[in-house]
Amino acid sequence: MPTRREFLATCALAGVAVGAAGRAAAGAADAREAEEQPEPDAASRAGRPLVVSTWNFGVAANAAAWRVLEGGGAALDAVEAGARVPESDPANHSVGLGGYPDRDGHVTLDACIMDDRGRAGSVCFLEGIEHPVSVARLVMERTPHVMLAGAGALRFAREQGFPERDLLTEDARRAWLEWRREAKYEPRANAERHDTLGILARDRDGRLAGACTTSGLAFKLHGRVGDSPIVGAALFVDGRVGAATATGHGEFVMRTLGGFLVVELMRQGCSPQEACEEAIARIAGDLGSDPGEVQVGYLAIDAAGRIGAHAVRPGFQYAWRDGEREVLVDAPAFFGD
Ligand code: ASP
Image (cartoon, rainbow, N blue to C red; front, side, top):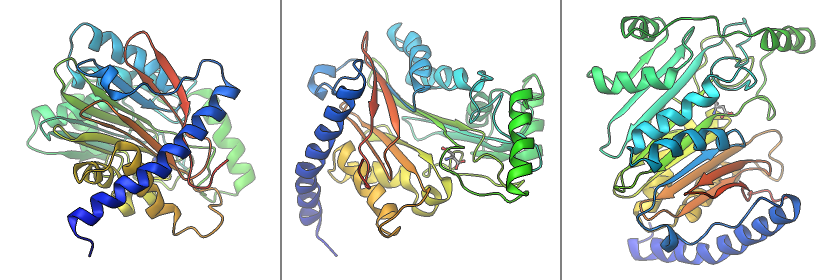
């Protein structure tokens, strides 16, 4: 067992390599897309709000969250507002309305939310409600529980006045029928057919919060629940340390409790970047020389406003915003470009 001192030294050493990898990735990204910029140092953000989100659709989520943060609003309200954006977007096939269904044609949603006081709420296997993140928030605020599932979550949502609607859009139905023809009804984790919104924010008062929302892996087995509603898997927040979120193949995140791991590593002295790299290494290190189609991406912020991100494979993007700057970044990856 390494001593605490040795462990911190490992993080510090890793930081040298991580910094170099991060810079290389940022340089490559700059060459590809002019709007991408390297992350400013945390000092320039001290006392300023910050929001980060997974994937390119995180840009729109961040914009909604920013409207809350710039008015002095709470991080918790900001992440909920951000998560509701892709939930309502029928063109987004991995979150909320328009999400791809499971193999039986049901759109089933997973979401969770967590604040700086360690409070958490979540729903899983929820059908017919456009905004699972808001139901999750009410589970947190109005029940003594953390998670509600399936029919029970739907009943709770109804009782709380959430409208019901059919979330299977014509586009998504067509894609499902197409998949059924090609795949012969065999669910298969596929790197192209998933993407969760994970969003983390720090408000003007330094409070942290996070949320996560998804329709999960496309064409999954009916009843499958992923990492997104599991506190400690795709989302974890510790108000004194930082916050982390995950996207990608949820089974890998669930088996390693990645969100908790990233925050715990930060608590023990790792920077957000070092923590994400270590959490990805625990997954990618077991995949041999070829990750196949497996993808997992972690995104983290610490209480000082530093950002970290890492993925198994290239392709994971995240967006951050701390004012007028809205930046989309290609995360560095374990298996490189
Ligand atoms: N993590 C999600 C899940 O496994 C999917 C994703 O993020 O792409 O349900």
